[in-house]
Length: 195
Image 1: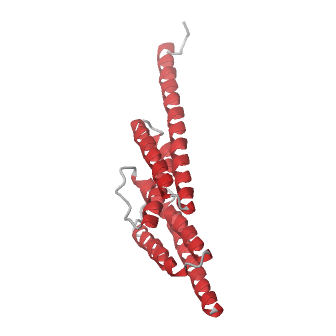
Image 2 (image 1 turned 60 degrees about the vertical axis):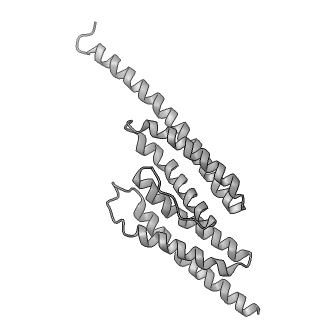
Image 3 (image 1 turned 90 degrees about the horizontal axis):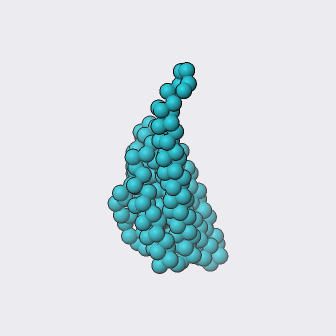
């Protein structure tokens, strides 16, 4: 028996932390899995394999449902946010390419917003591919979608603590839109000169 330390309480705290550590490790594994599925889905969309992309996003969605079981843990948001953000980005991008509106997401607010912001970058990549393949006429739809996302997100001028990294991502989206417009104009001019 010690002189000052309440050993019973410290043993209890140690056990509680072991449980938290195990849950944290499980959550990290699930988030990694969801992120990988979403990232691969984006690559499949760019490659034109929409069915594979849909399947991967279904796997990611299912994994995110498992992730929600960890909502009561103090580290939930810090660990799961990136996986949710990647999923939103992939779903928004796939739906854009398919000509559909994005669905309503049942996720935390910050990753929904930052996922939309990140989708601007994927739409830009898609627009650049369209230009590369001479489909310049289809690029305007990409620019319109990017502008639509930006015009909605720019209204979310909340503190960084509420929506981490959103301001930076919205600024980056503006830059990507302007660069895409410039690239589009250059592609159109080159097309006109080649005629």
